[in-house]
Image (cartoon, rainbow, N blue to C red; front, side, top):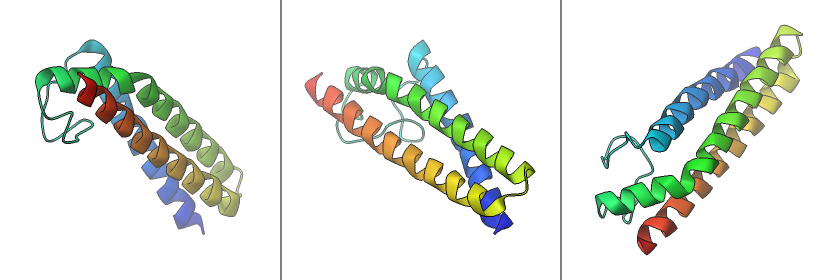
Length: 117
């Protein structure tokens, strides 16, 4: 069970890094339209203006995703350190699922804003 909790911890840390980078680049405007990194949908990729509008609209949700991932990582790490690997695994993977849901919602918000741009 400890491996499951450790896996959730690693995934949470990766989400923290990825979401922080995406949210920071979105805020600074340094993330130009591309097919590698960002919230990629048919509408966000339609033009540079649509890309910018979509990412700007999703920005607050991206920072929320950072907070969720960080809380999940810290909580999972503390539970692992306390020796409660079973609860750490459950808490860790629930945090990951919440984060995935938040990112899916952020992508939908970005798509709507890009379509309207």
